[in-house]
Amino acid sequence: MDAAFTAEQDEMRRTLREILGKRCGPDEVKAAVRTAAGHDPELWRRLSRQLGLPGIAIAEEYGGVGCAPADLALACEETGRVLLPSPLLATAGLVAPLIGALGTPAQRAALLPPLAAGTLTAALAVPGTALATALALTGDNTPGDWSGGGRAGGVQARGDGAGGRRLYGEAAQVLDGHSAGLLLVAAHTGGFARSRTLLFLVRGDAPGLVRARQATLDETRPQGRVQLRDVEAELLGGEDGNDAADVAGALAATGRTVATALAAEAVGAAGQALARTVEYVRRREQFGRAVGSFQAVKHRLADLYVQVQAARSAAYYAAWDPDQGGLALAQALEALRLTAAEAIQLHGGIGFTWEHDAHLYFKRAAADELLFGPAHRLRAHAAQRAGLFPAIQERTAAR
Image 1 (cartoon, rainbow, N blue to C red):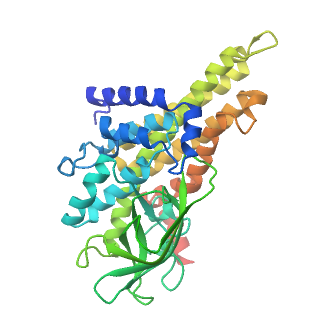
Image 2 (cartoon, rainbow, N blue to C red):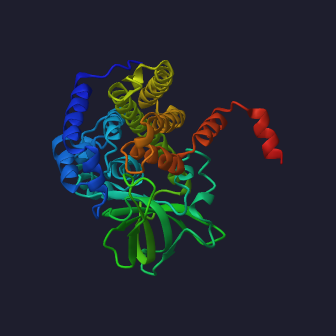
Image 3 (cartoon, helix red, strand yellow):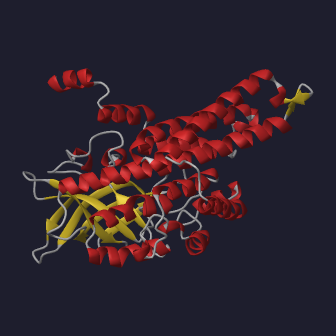
């Protein structure tokens, strides 16, 4: 495996860092998340036109850039550095791969080009708080329990008598669910006895669709509550297409790829939090000398540096081997949490104020662990998949 970046990848990183450096300071980020969309639409359009960011992993035949998952991870590391609020993760990381894997030729031709161009944003609506399980990051997603149960709860799909489907139910904590122009909804179909979870396409302006933005710990990851009240929907893959096993497999494959992107994003955030802390302790003086000159502070910063670099190595490795995405994400989330917490500590009294920029990184760390972790469950599921503890698994199954 050649882990070196190409000249094109280095140029993409440089260009993206330059654009984001000018438009994504802490004040600009705080202003963007308070807009109705939860991000800066003008910056999103520029990133789409100039870099093709939303289509970076979409095939060229559909108007995308056609890059590998490593390129998406590289871009996410840069967006993570500035905690960019954008539809990138929901659109390019979650929905576009599922449409590419499961959609009919007509669905791919109709939806992937506007997604690649950034003119259409999308969100994956999973009932409850089970996004990590749905993506097979913290548990097996084949039983389908994560989608709410067959008789009640979650979202139900019923025939409308004319060959179509109608959706009923609710999904909370949907990333960009309040503003996305397209929803990909996981819903039960087939009745209680033969219940199975399939994916359905719902337009953002469909009658009966009610959406509201939720208050979240991390405002840079806007989430919405989605209610479906007799909403017309289209089955992803068509009536003769995918079954529940196809859906579970596609979700798991998407989970591995998005875990790699999230790991790179967390590494970017952790690296920037560390860099800002180092800069602060160099300037801040206490007892007539710079805070960073004290040996105890140096040791703490050195430990953080090792933690961040180890997480970066894991994320880069997962970019070439997505099967390692879950483990890389666990290490990156842990590195971000520790770095953000130490950043608050080392900024002293000012760091403890809720309005300080250090808390942006701490909130991102906590929110990502709630959505996609926690780290110990990511590691436990990876160990289970690898069969590291067969004796324990056999005893658990016997109970």
